[in-house]
Image (cartoon, rainbow, N blue to C red; front, side, top):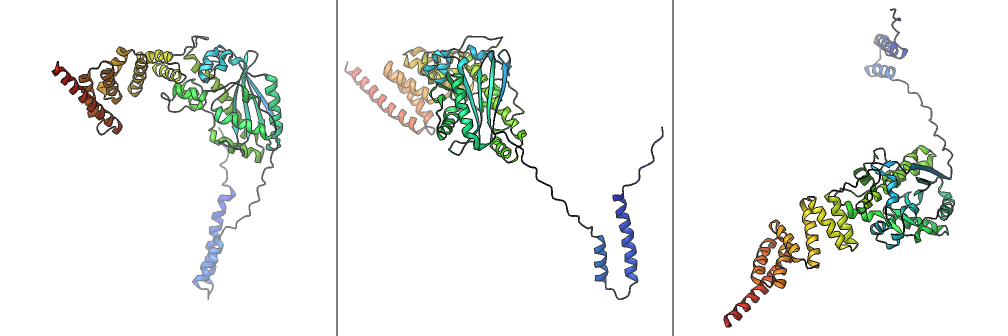
Amino acid sequence: MNYPDKPKAPKKERVPRNRAETIGRTWLEIERKPGVSTKEKLERLIALTRTPTREQPAVPRPEPQKRTPLQVLENHYNIHGRYGKIPISAGLKISGEVLALLSRDRSFSDLDLSTALFLDLETTGLSGGVGVVPFLIGLGYFRDDRFQVTQFFLGDLAEEKHLIRELGQFFAQMGFRSVVTFNGKAFDLPLLETRFILHSEILSLSALPHLDFLFSARSLWSHKHESCRLYHLAQQILEADREEDIPSAEIPHRYFEFLRTGDFTLIEPILYHNQEDLLSLLGVVISGSALFGEEKEDGFETAADAMDLFGAARLLERTGETERSATFMRRALEGRLSGEIAVLAKMKLASYFKRNRDWPSAISLWQEMRPLNHLTCFRELAIYYEHTERDYEKARQIAEEGLSVAFGTSRSLEKDFSHRLERLRNKLERKSREKDRE
C-alpha cells in the first residue's frame, strides 16, 4: 500500500521558528552597535516578541424571528392506550359518588369525567397577581374515543384579549360540566378569572363543580411519598416517564427569552411539560379513585398497599364518612402498617370505637399501645376506668404510670395526670370511709 507523502507542517507552526531566527539575528546586530544601552536593547527585543492583535469583526446579533400572536395546538391519545401503567379509559369508569368524595362536592354525584375539563396553566410568574399572565392554557378532555389535549399559546402579550375571547368561545362551544385541576382553586382558576375580568369577559368555568385533586392527593399520599407535587406523583404512582421534563421554575424565563428572540424551540419543552401535567392529572385522579371503586379495567389493579389504605381512611375521615374510614383503617392495620403510621392508625380506630361505645375494641387498642408509652393511651384508659367502670384503683394505677411517662416530656399531660390522681385519691378515700361506716 502506498502512503501519501507526510504533510508539511502548516504555516502557523513555522512562524514561531522564523521569528526566533529573526530575533537571534537582530540581537547580534544590536550587540555590534556601539553606544546602545542594555535597556534599549531589551526594549527592541520585547517589541519583536509582541504579536500584533487583530481586531475581531463584530458578530451581528440574530434578528428576532417572526412570532405568531396566538396558536392552538392539538394532540390526542387513544382511549385504549395507557399513561404510565394507568389505562386512559379508566377515567370514564369513575362514578359520580367517587368524584363527589374526592372533591367534597355533592354536585359531582350526577357527573362523570366524560364532560369534565382538565385545566393546567403555564404563566409568566409562579405566584398569583395582576401582573402574572397565563401564556399557555392547557385543556384536556374526553372526545370521540380519545383523550384530547388542546393548548392555547400566546405568542404576543399584546394579543391577550384575543386569547381570552377565543377561550371564552371554546368553553361555550364545548359545554363542559365540571373542572379538574391540581391546585386550581388557589392558582389556576382565580388567575384565569382575573384575566377574563380585566378584558371584560366572563369565565363560565367559575360556575362549574371543581375537583382540585391536590387536597385529595395530600390526604391519600403525603404520609407515603416525600412530595405531593404532580410531577413526583406521576413518577411514583403512575410509573410515568417524565425524565425529559423541565423544571417549572424554568418556564417563565424560557417564555421571556422567546418573546425577545422569537425562538420557538424555547417553547417546545414547555408544551411538552404542560401536556404531561394534564396526562399526569388524569392518571392520579384515576389512581386515587381506584382505591374506592370496584371497577377493573384491562387488567388494571389498584394494588393498594397498607399505606394507600391508610390514606383512603384519612380522606374518608376528613369528609365525615367515619364508618367507611374505620373499615379502611382496619384493612390498613391488617396489611401490617409499621412505625408511627401504625400507631396513628390505631389511635384513630380507637377513637372511632370510643365514639361508638365499642369499649372492648377501644380498650384492646389502647392496651396494645401501652408498652409504647403513648401518653394518650394512658389518659384514655384512666378516663375509661374512672368514669365508665368506676374502678378508681385501676384508674389510679394507670394515671400514676402515665404521670411517670409524661414527666419531663409533656407539661400539659403532666398537669392532667396530677389533677386526675388528686381527684382519684379523694374518691378512693371517700369510698374507704363509706366502707368503714358499713
